[in-house]
Length: 305
Image 1: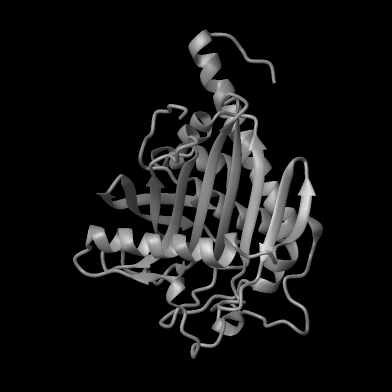
Image 2: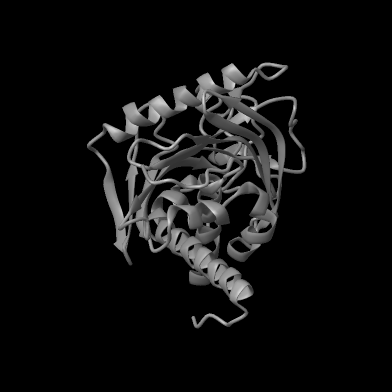
């Protein structure tokens, strides 16, 4: 197995999921694409829940409700349930549709009948960086420094607890965004998970949204949701990292007790092929720039771009 310096507090998947929405918004703005059509729901300043699925539909996957006080074993079991769902519903499913393949990035989508309103998205790319370089840049401790380089809507992140069970590190986090153009501020409360590397050296991380009084709802934010699973496999003697990221995201508060939100999911589905590629390449460029800056600081020489 390739040896790396494994650190906790990684948030790679969470960052890329949110970069997808940033890329979507910037793409829509630059192309002048209308947010709504006459056949689609319109959301006003109050962000009424017009675009959310019916509240009669139970969606436990929109946010796992934690016990109070939080039990580490419960977190671990919840993560394993999410992970198994990905293996059963996504990995084994042959019905993926490739939406875009450009500049080495492939983006595909899978709509599963258990939750057709929130499809799975998969992005693959061979990063021209080692696993360690990718991991170091994306540590949660570095979000406030690095995230604004990629995401103009980033507001901040806070860590509210750390738990370790059988080699799995789990961080309870809250990520906040500024207003998303016509839409209100968002926050996500999620568990960022890091597992021990696989036998072939592949690193595994993921995330899933949770509900807990430790991080109560703030009425000035719309609570968004996500879950995800990612693999970072060292290739070419660890000169590159084969990245596979699978995720589901929803910027509307679609839980049973949710307050709604009017970001149209149809627009996300329509544009994810393009914005998924943009997000991966934006992250790659930011990591490369950071690596050049750090190399220049150590050597005292300017690294040619």
